[in-house]
Length: 195
Image (cartoon, rainbow, N blue to C red; front, top):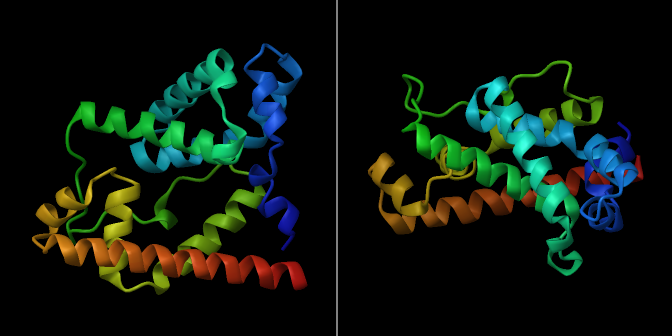
């Protein structure tokens, strides 16, 4: 697997984000091309709707066009900034529309159930496969707390209430699960670089 394809969204030049917010059409086009697939996939995963995801993506890029000058290179990469904007907008929309329905087994949909299609690049499909495998290897309780936190935007208190678990247990599961996920991704990328 080609690491450069897998990490393409992570390799967005911070100057592109800054120039896009200053009205540089070429920079904005490059930013869109390098990030739209990842952002759209995240929005679809959170909202469960391609139409809603398209609306979220439009609002994110309008904000980028108008306010990218606020992007601070020292606070993170452009893709982190864009993912945070997208996730926030999608979760705001979810909260405004009411609670999300869980499957009958009590769990939320996993990453592997996210829609794929013409918007997904091969690098995104490869990353989705790797993340799905890593999540599947986590204990079910850790995976469930991560999904509730990240995809539904629930706070640890809300997760504890929903799962009828002590708050300390939920926080520990989140920390341990995210740590395992981070270590596994790092090990995967290091292995792929040496291959």
